[in-house]
Length: 88
Image 1 (cartoon, helix red, strand yellow):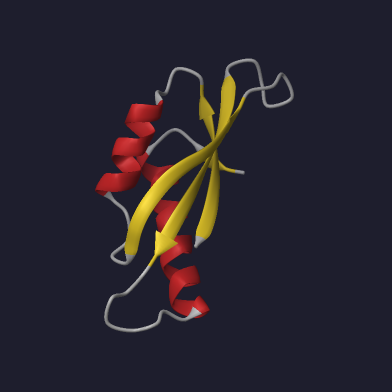
Image 2 (cartoon, helix red, strand yellow):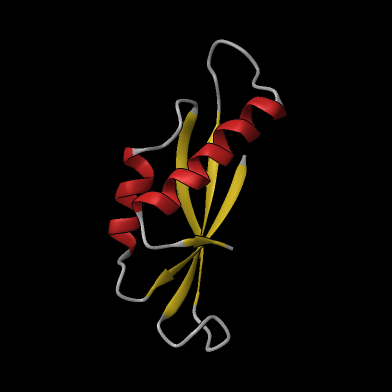
């Protein structure tokens, strides 16, 4: 399991973000779940933070931390290319 927190513009809907996350999720990511949404002036007037939990599982073998981290890092970079968000 890995978490990812995104800083996104208020105008970007949860549905738009969730659709991209699920469309491009890594091979062994079995679920992506929103667990926190936060808004504050400290983030910026038109910004919000959304935190997601990503579960990685391979039904045929145990995934190593290295495998999970590599996939998760690629996924995080890819998300910032597909959406107007940054990783917190």
